[in-house]
Length: 293
Image (cartoon, rainbow, N blue to C red; front, side, top):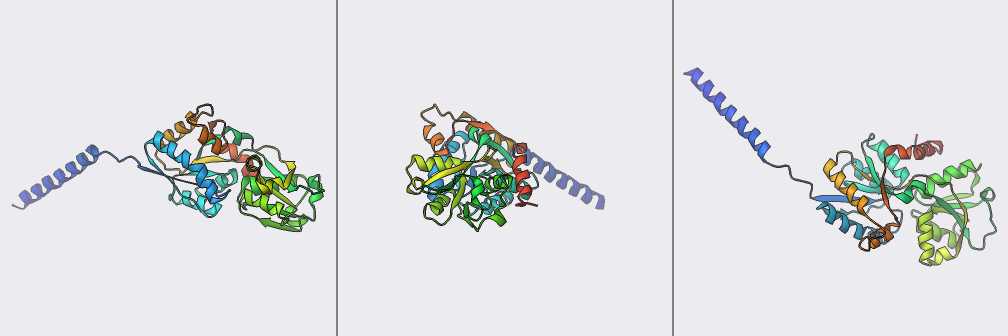
């Protein structure tokens, strides 16, 4: 009698296990329905929202997912959001990507960048009536950088200043961090800083828009080129989703009227794939400047 009960129990358990396995095979895994993206706050929140709204609508159409853009208050928040999987993808500067790579133990993956980001530059600007003509004259002056984690607004300008024989921490009278590129221009125009360092692309955009602060300033020097911005995804994002995103960016064509608004807002002529090793020099510069250990 006891053996009959045991055998019956075995059959019941076996049936349940078989049913569970069959159910897991027959039930499809739901595809990701929402793509959560963010960006480093290198410009004002309203400008970032304006830039990314058409791009988000395009990505939603191309991937079949709802795209949600989440603004953040500072650069560190983007890094942490990728590391803790609160977002799926982010628009990062080269330095922010290096920080993200370190924070995620190398799992975050840069997938796409504008062709312009392969040879990016920063500019040092001064008031329009400034007598300064070279970087060597900056010792004893005040300087405004953007965010401490900005590639084009801090790291690379700092690195190239050091290459020119200027130690920012010792040779400047004061260092200020404006928080964003457009804010740096405002610092210089208002006399809060003798010189400012910012993204060359933003500088051009502000001048094209006849921004009052930009019109009160001029370029003192332009840095050598370096790799900068990219779109980075969290390391465990579904490969099929990553492929859809990558293909969507590669399809964008500056000559296509339907893509013109997106490309103009992103200041892009073309998108290309990228990889982690492209940012090795950024990491070396950050270590040289002792911004990461």
